Length: 185
Image (cartoon, rainbow, N blue to C red; front, side):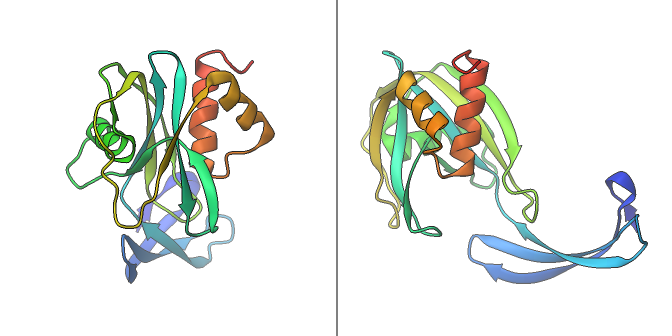
């Protein structure tokens, strides 16, 4: 058995069903409180990236797209899944270029957060691009229909305060950016 944090012990793991881009597994753990074995579902996935994208005139570039799970339109920073053997920054640059056509050279790492720590094992890595400019056409996947919007920092702040970002990764990364840069106090 392998001891995890706070006294939890990993007894064994079994592969579960494959779900396209995701894989599942069942972990059998010993609860330190009652010494009972519990079976938990873990969804394994690739890490993801998103980019807080600022143009030279301080507009924030966001994408507007249908999210299939909720069947709702989401406004969020551009981003997506990392590819195998791709660095976080390489993935951020690729996803930004593919989804928006924007590129730039002033990149800064912002934060890494667990994607959904209750039952997923992956993380989302957020970067800031401070000198974005439109240099390429979009390169969208078959299932993507992305509209690009540019908003002022004040407009994005207002959306954040009103709770208009439905995607938790969008809310988290934009909040972190706004706090770090001093726009939320």
